[in-house]
Length: 407
Image 1 (tube, rainbow, N blue to C red):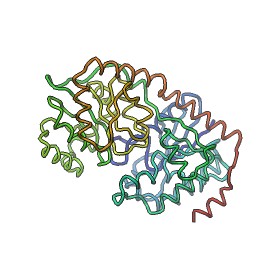
Image 2: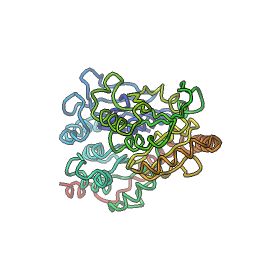
Image 3: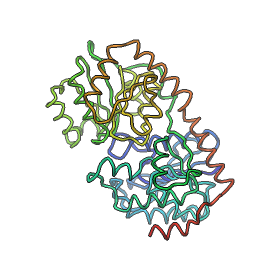
Image 4: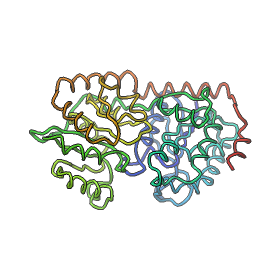
């Protein structure tokens, strides 16, 4: 099967840890690579953000990344990319007219906008990864999304051939947007089981427990809540992986905010900012933890909990989004309310005091990751969606009418 993926801001080649580089980059790269292993031909179309990048780069056998010229060839925040989606769509339309793929899979709302305007009669499958309605609900006036995002997402949900939701919570959100339940299929994000699993852990500070938080350093990821909780969790370090490179940490506004919070909470000597951690180093860091803390205020899916589970480490996760599916409370980890440092501290103290419980949770998490979330399994489930859509080519609405409604 010839598959075109569109991931306008999240290149599968990007270095992780920046404000706009995270789970979507990982998912697109791993899904494309796994589809290549199944024998498919995959091209991932992403916006060029560096003039030195070649037009095409091989990511894996059968998989290429296509750098599309749309707007300045420089890094731009994703919320500033909408004006360039017309040029992005036109470049895609020309490519697909010459060499049409069997199916298009767009990732994130602006990718779908471009894909739908370029696709003509090629079926389009879409994964939102994050919904504007959820972001607006939690961030309010801090939401920097373009003003038309919510209306455009409703049009996308009505216009694509199939929606691939990553968790059950997202299904409910899509239904609130009047999406057709018959056109929604749940396929979760996955984990690279060759990279994340049993193995070597990095050295630790003697006499202290270790917690690890790995995420983009933006306020909604809840690292500040973990720092506040640490004040009531004695003899414990918190290692924070994410953000800019180590040498640039001092210039990062969020790092400065979190350091000030750690100082005010009396835990500055127990919070270690690791900066951007190379992908190859992440498994050893996760394995070194007594528990991995994932407490965002909201989370479309959350890949780090899967990576920690695959490494056999228990997860303390806020009960939001995909984490309510992936982390089974009391079995592979513990759920806590978001934005609640007191409950988080109580939960962590109890877990750190019980090594037998941690071992059981870790073993159950590793089994769940192996049996449910390996990317070969995720790729086969996704490919089943592609095959069905390509075979039936069912249209539930006329795209032309949807486009007019979106204007």
